[in-house]
Length: 495
Image (cartoon, rainbow, N blue to C red; front, side):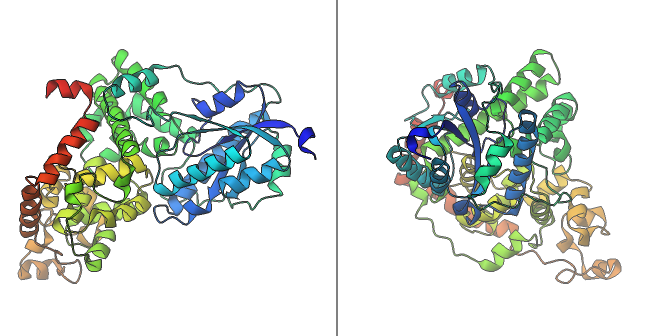
């Protein structure tokens, strides 16, 4: 077919926005009236990237199947291929003339940023207009946070974008099927029995509705509890990370509950955390080198000797500290931990094991079903104590276990070696005397590991080094720079 006779189309390129409702890229494409093709690419650069694991791809596959179920009402579906962006568009161009490409601005890891720069060059060379939209109130190109709150609130207060395609505007299933003959297609099968939250907007809406209706009533009381938080927290983080829901959808539902006095205090707390979520992603958008190095340049000289033995023990929940081990095994198995326990396992890794935070990022990104780069790297650095501007937090796993899992129910569930011990020993089995071990037929070093390090000694070692570094010139200068760039306007006034 000659270029002159090719049908002119839009392409909507899905990334981390796997939804139809409140999707500005879709809205911008549909209001043009042009025929529109929806595309998702399983990119080789990400399939081979160590930050991702099978649980992420399965969640995405479930999300795509859910999207196609919704699109079937319009006799349409996505073109789902395994390739790269440029090659995919080039093949589509052989049959159609792509007028515009629509997508959101992605705050991702460096490989996705580099990919987008290559995509921009490709589109310019092929005279395709790229329309990118702001994603979840994160703004590209900001130099500071002077007006960020106003921008974010204005974005969140805007109406939701409805999904209303015109008749025959979307590619039909038959037209998509024809295009698939030119591509390598991924296998979309997943394991329905896998112990992870299932992907898709349909499932996301179920989680959201049950949280606002009932589960959220204990949000404040249970948020720090490793077991109870699994029910009382929203569990919406993977649906926000992969875009099954927009933050704006969740914000509006949160405000509705507050206005109607439904679990008001709980929802006010939850709403504030939604804003902080955007705050951290905005920080990463403005300083994306945080993927590799400490945001505070003063800490980049900090050298830690890597211990593969420590890393493997931590990764597999075999450190000899029951709460740490329960958290890591739970996370590895289910993809979820509540916020406090996430902070605790990072603190243990970076302070007690004295390992570089960079070594934790890939392990945890593979484990977290809700891996969101803009949250992941800033939070890990903050818990590692290498920002300089945040309070140094070192979590004692034994005390946290006694406080937040007093009966050891969570620990016993995930560290079954300890399930027959008396509660007094569940949090510190290493305190058992030889006679007590004999009576319980439980032996430290055989049935369960000895503590891999001494908590008090390692805490003091890490604390002394990190507190002393706070007074170094470069750290102080960087503190001022970071605060000037990232402090929110209302907090500037209070300080």
